[in-house]
Length: 256
Ligand code: ATP
Ligand code: MG
Image (cartoon, rainbow, N blue to C red; front, top):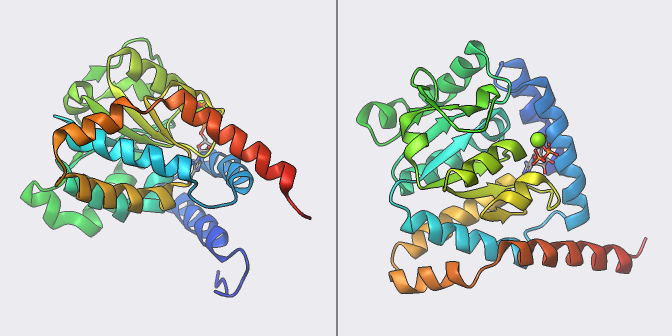
Protein backbone atom coordinates (compact mmCIF):
# COMPACT_ATOMS: atom_id res chain seq x y z
CA UNK A 1 0.00 0.00 0.00
CA UNK A 2 1.20 3.50 -0.79
CA UNK A 3 0.53 5.67 2.25
CA UNK A 4 0.73 9.41 1.49
CA UNK A 5 3.26 11.17 3.76
CA UNK A 6 0.73 13.90 4.40
CA UNK A 7 -1.70 11.51 6.04
CA UNK A 8 -2.20 12.66 9.68
CA UNK A 9 -1.59 9.12 10.91
CA UNK A 10 1.28 8.35 8.53
CA UNK A 11 3.67 6.90 11.11
CA UNK A 12 1.05 4.68 12.65
CA UNK A 13 -0.13 3.41 9.25
CA UNK A 14 3.44 2.71 8.19
CA UNK A 15 4.01 0.63 11.28
CA UNK A 16 0.84 -1.36 10.60
CA UNK A 17 2.01 -1.89 7.04
CA UNK A 18 5.36 -3.23 8.28
CA UNK A 19 3.58 -5.65 10.59
CA UNK A 20 1.28 -6.92 7.83
CA UNK A 21 4.32 -7.46 5.60
CA UNK A 22 6.05 -9.32 8.41
CA UNK A 23 2.97 -11.49 8.80
CA UNK A 24 3.08 -12.35 5.10
CA UNK A 25 6.78 -13.21 5.37
CA UNK A 26 6.13 -15.56 8.27
CA UNK A 27 8.01 -13.40 10.78
CA UNK A 28 5.01 -12.33 12.80
CA UNK A 29 2.37 -14.52 14.41
CA UNK A 30 -1.23 -13.44 13.85
CA UNK A 31 -1.54 -12.62 17.53
CA UNK A 32 1.33 -10.14 17.08
CA UNK A 33 -1.11 -7.86 15.27
CA UNK A 34 -3.43 -7.88 18.26
CA UNK A 35 -0.54 -7.17 20.64
CA UNK A 36 0.35 -4.14 18.52
CA UNK A 37 -3.22 -2.87 18.61
CA UNK A 38 -3.28 -2.99 22.39
CA UNK A 39 -0.05 -1.00 22.43
CA UNK A 40 -1.44 1.61 20.01
CA UNK A 41 -4.31 2.29 22.35
CA UNK A 42 -1.95 3.06 25.24
CA UNK A 43 0.12 5.26 22.95
CA UNK A 44 -2.95 7.43 22.34
CA UNK A 45 -3.32 7.83 26.11
CA UNK A 46 0.33 8.91 26.37
CA UNK A 47 0.00 11.45 23.55
CA UNK A 48 2.19 9.41 21.17
CA UNK A 49 5.41 10.89 22.44
CA UNK A 50 8.26 10.02 24.77
CA UNK A 51 7.34 11.40 28.17
CA UNK A 52 9.90 12.67 30.65
CA UNK A 53 9.17 9.58 32.74
CA UNK A 54 10.03 7.31 29.82
CA UNK A 55 13.22 9.29 29.27
CA UNK A 56 14.17 8.76 32.90
CA UNK A 57 13.78 4.98 32.57
CA UNK A 58 15.64 5.00 29.24
CA UNK A 59 18.62 6.64 30.96
CA UNK A 60 18.57 4.14 33.81
CA UNK A 61 18.30 1.27 31.32
CA UNK A 62 21.25 2.64 29.36
CA UNK A 63 23.30 2.87 32.55
CA UNK A 64 22.41 -0.73 33.44
CA UNK A 65 23.36 -1.99 29.98
CA UNK A 66 26.68 -0.15 30.04
CA UNK A 67 27.53 -1.51 33.50
CA UNK A 68 26.37 -5.05 32.67
CA UNK A 69 28.96 -7.80 32.45
CA UNK A 70 27.01 -9.94 30.06
CA UNK A 71 23.92 -8.26 28.59
CA UNK A 72 21.65 -9.71 25.89
CA UNK A 73 18.69 -8.42 23.87
CA UNK A 74 15.74 -10.76 23.37
CA UNK A 75 13.63 -10.26 20.24
CA UNK A 76 10.26 -11.52 19.05
CA UNK A 77 8.40 -11.14 15.74
CA UNK A 78 7.02 -7.66 16.48
CA UNK A 79 10.44 -6.33 17.45
CA UNK A 80 12.08 -7.70 14.30
CA UNK A 81 9.25 -6.38 12.11
CA UNK A 82 9.47 -2.85 13.53
CA UNK A 83 13.04 -2.31 14.69
CA UNK A 84 15.54 -4.82 13.30
CA UNK A 85 18.18 -2.17 12.49
CA UNK A 86 17.90 -0.41 15.84
CA UNK A 87 18.21 -3.68 17.74
CA UNK A 88 21.35 -4.58 15.79
CA UNK A 89 22.80 -1.10 16.32
CA UNK A 90 22.24 -1.34 20.05
CA UNK A 91 23.64 -4.88 20.26
CA UNK A 92 26.78 -3.75 18.46
CA UNK A 93 27.26 -0.97 21.05
CA UNK A 94 27.20 -3.72 23.68
CA UNK A 95 28.56 -7.24 23.25
CA UNK A 96 26.69 -8.06 20.03
CA UNK A 97 24.34 -10.60 21.61
CA UNK A 98 20.75 -11.04 20.44
CA UNK A 99 18.44 -13.94 21.27
CA UNK A 100 15.38 -14.91 19.26
CA UNK A 101 12.57 -15.86 21.61
CA UNK A 102 9.08 -16.49 20.27
CA UNK A 103 5.81 -16.89 22.12
CA UNK A 104 4.38 -18.81 19.18
CA UNK A 105 7.53 -20.73 18.37
CA UNK A 106 7.69 -22.73 15.17
CA UNK A 107 10.75 -23.84 13.24
CA UNK A 108 9.50 -21.81 10.24
CA UNK A 109 9.22 -18.56 12.18
CA UNK A 110 12.57 -19.07 13.86
CA UNK A 111 14.14 -19.56 10.47
CA UNK A 112 12.30 -16.61 8.89
CA UNK A 113 13.52 -14.31 11.67
CA UNK A 114 17.06 -15.62 11.59
CA UNK A 115 17.08 -15.02 7.81
CA UNK A 116 16.07 -11.39 8.32
CA UNK A 117 19.23 -10.89 10.36
CA UNK A 118 21.31 -12.88 7.89
CA UNK A 119 20.01 -10.97 4.85
CA UNK A 120 21.10 -7.59 6.19
CA UNK A 121 23.89 -8.39 8.60
CA UNK A 122 25.68 -11.46 7.23
CA UNK A 123 29.10 -9.81 7.48
CA UNK A 124 28.62 -8.83 11.11
CA UNK A 125 27.42 -12.35 11.91
CA UNK A 126 30.31 -14.00 10.08
CA UNK A 127 32.88 -11.74 11.72
CA UNK A 128 31.39 -12.40 15.17
CA UNK A 129 30.43 -8.76 15.76
CA UNK A 130 26.85 -9.90 15.94
CA UNK A 131 25.80 -13.14 17.61
CA UNK A 132 22.28 -14.46 17.12
CA UNK A 133 21.17 -17.07 19.67
CA UNK A 134 17.95 -18.92 20.30
CA UNK A 135 17.60 -21.13 17.24
CA UNK A 136 19.48 -24.42 17.44
CA UNK A 137 21.08 -23.77 20.80
CA UNK A 138 18.14 -23.64 23.20
CA UNK A 139 19.42 -26.21 25.66
CA UNK A 140 18.62 -24.34 28.86
CA UNK A 141 15.31 -23.96 30.69
CA UNK A 142 14.12 -20.92 32.64
CA UNK A 143 12.77 -22.27 35.94
CA UNK A 144 9.02 -21.82 36.60
CA UNK A 145 8.11 -21.18 32.98
CA UNK A 146 6.31 -23.98 31.18
CA UNK A 147 5.73 -22.49 27.74
CA UNK A 148 8.18 -22.86 24.85
CA UNK A 149 9.45 -19.40 25.74
CA UNK A 150 11.23 -20.96 28.69
CA UNK A 151 13.74 -22.61 26.36
CA UNK A 152 16.81 -20.42 25.98
CA UNK A 153 20.46 -20.54 24.97
CA UNK A 154 23.33 -20.79 27.46
CA UNK A 155 24.19 -17.13 26.75
CA UNK A 156 20.72 -15.96 27.59
CA UNK A 157 20.58 -18.19 30.66
CA UNK A 158 23.80 -16.71 31.99
CA UNK A 159 23.15 -13.05 31.11
CA UNK A 160 23.02 -10.59 34.01
CA UNK A 161 21.01 -7.86 32.26
CA UNK A 162 18.34 -8.70 29.67
CA UNK A 163 16.59 -6.19 27.44
CA UNK A 164 13.23 -7.67 26.53
CA UNK A 165 11.23 -5.31 24.34
CA UNK A 166 7.54 -6.32 24.22
CA UNK A 167 7.82 -9.14 26.72
CA UNK A 168 5.16 -11.32 28.27
CA UNK A 169 4.39 -11.00 31.96
CA UNK A 170 5.03 -14.64 32.89
CA UNK A 171 8.48 -14.65 31.42
CA UNK A 172 9.38 -11.30 32.96
CA UNK A 173 8.44 -12.63 36.38
CA UNK A 174 10.44 -15.83 35.86
CA UNK A 175 13.50 -13.89 34.67
CA UNK A 176 13.42 -11.56 37.67
CA UNK A 177 13.10 -14.61 39.96
CA UNK A 178 16.26 -15.99 38.35
CA UNK A 179 18.06 -12.87 39.61
CA UNK A 180 18.34 -11.11 36.28
CA UNK A 181 17.93 -7.38 35.82
CA UNK A 182 15.07 -7.11 33.34
CA UNK A 183 14.56 -4.04 31.15
CA UNK A 184 11.31 -4.03 29.19
CA UNK A 185 9.75 -1.67 26.67
CA UNK A 186 5.98 -1.71 27.00
CA UNK A 187 3.39 0.95 26.25
CA UNK A 188 1.04 -0.44 28.86
CA UNK A 189 2.07 0.74 32.35
CA UNK A 190 -0.46 -1.66 33.87
CA UNK A 191 0.76 -4.89 32.28
CA UNK A 192 2.38 -7.60 34.36
CA UNK A 193 5.52 -7.05 32.31
CA UNK A 194 5.56 -3.38 33.31
CA UNK A 195 5.00 -4.18 36.97
CA UNK A 196 7.50 -7.03 37.29
CA UNK A 197 10.40 -5.49 35.33
CA UNK A 198 13.42 -3.99 37.03
CA UNK A 199 13.18 -1.04 34.62
CA UNK A 200 10.09 -0.47 32.48
CA UNK A 201 10.34 1.91 29.56
CA UNK A 202 6.75 2.97 28.92
CA UNK A 203 7.23 4.15 25.37
CA UNK A 204 6.76 2.98 21.81
CA UNK A 205 9.53 0.65 20.69
CA UNK A 206 10.71 2.65 17.66
CA UNK A 207 10.77 5.89 19.65
CA UNK A 208 12.56 4.38 22.64
CA UNK A 209 15.33 2.43 20.90
CA UNK A 210 17.13 5.37 19.21
CA UNK A 211 17.18 7.17 22.57
CA UNK A 212 18.49 4.09 24.31
CA UNK A 213 21.28 3.82 21.72
CA UNK A 214 22.12 7.49 22.18
CA UNK A 215 22.44 7.19 25.97
CA UNK A 216 24.39 3.92 25.81
CA UNK A 217 26.93 5.71 23.59
CA UNK A 218 27.06 8.69 25.88
CA UNK A 219 27.29 6.67 29.10
CA UNK A 220 30.25 4.63 27.89
CA UNK A 221 32.26 7.80 28.53
CA UNK A 222 30.80 8.51 31.97
CA UNK A 223 32.35 7.23 35.17
CA UNK A 224 30.93 4.25 36.98
CA UNK A 225 29.87 6.23 40.07
CA UNK A 226 27.64 8.51 38.01
CA UNK A 227 25.91 5.53 36.36
CA UNK A 228 25.51 3.65 39.63
CA UNK A 229 23.96 6.72 41.24
CA UNK A 230 21.45 7.00 38.38
CA UNK A 231 20.39 3.39 38.98
CA UNK A 232 20.33 3.67 42.76
CA UNK A 233 18.06 6.71 42.83
CA UNK A 234 15.53 5.19 40.41
CA UNK A 235 12.39 3.44 41.59
CA UNK A 236 10.42 1.61 38.90
CA UNK A 237 7.13 1.46 40.81
CA UNK A 238 7.26 5.22 41.48
CA UNK A 239 7.97 5.84 37.81
CA UNK A 240 4.94 3.73 36.80
CA UNK A 241 2.76 5.64 39.28
CA UNK A 242 4.00 8.94 37.82
CA UNK A 243 3.03 7.73 34.36
CA UNK A 244 -0.46 6.76 35.49
CA UNK A 245 -0.86 10.20 37.06
CA UNK A 246 0.42 11.80 33.86
CA UNK A 247 -2.15 9.89 31.77
CA UNK A 248 -5.00 10.71 34.10
CA UNK A 249 -4.13 14.44 34.28
CA UNK A 250 -3.74 14.53 30.53
CA UNK A 251 -7.16 12.99 30.02
CA UNK A 252 -8.80 15.35 32.51
CA UNK A 253 -7.40 18.40 30.78
CA UNK A 254 -7.94 17.35 27.19
CA UNK A 255 -9.94 19.71 24.94
CA UNK A 256 -12.10 17.98 22.36
P1 ATP B 1 1.49 -9.01 30.21
O1 ATP B 1 1.78 -10.33 29.61
O2 ATP B 1 2.70 -8.20 30.47
O3 ATP B 1 0.56 -9.02 31.37
P2 ATP B 1 -0.38 -8.54 28.06
O4 ATP B 1 -0.61 -10.02 28.06
O5 ATP B 1 -1.53 -7.62 28.24
O6 ATP B 1 0.71 -8.13 29.12
P3 ATP B 1 1.07 -9.01 25.67
O7 ATP B 1 0.09 -9.53 24.69
O8 ATP B 1 1.94 -9.97 26.41
O9 ATP B 1 0.32 -8.09 26.72
O10 ATP B 1 1.96 -7.93 24.95
C1 ATP B 1 1.36 -6.87 24.22
C2 ATP B 1 1.83 -5.56 24.77
O11 ATP B 1 3.03 -5.17 24.10
C3 ATP B 1 0.87 -4.41 24.51
O12 ATP B 1 -0.09 -4.24 25.51
C4 ATP B 1 1.74 -3.21 24.42
O13 ATP B 1 1.79 -2.53 25.64
C5 ATP B 1 3.08 -3.77 24.08
N1 ATP B 1 3.44 -3.31 22.73
C6 ATP B 1 2.98 -3.76 21.53
N2 ATP B 1 3.54 -3.10 20.51
C7 ATP B 1 4.38 -2.19 21.08
C8 ATP B 1 5.28 -1.21 20.56
N3 ATP B 1 5.43 -1.02 19.25
N4 ATP B 1 5.98 -0.47 21.44
C9 ATP B 1 5.86 -0.66 22.77
N5 ATP B 1 5.04 -1.57 23.33
C10 ATP B 1 4.31 -2.33 22.49
MG1 MG C 1 1.02 -11.38 27.96
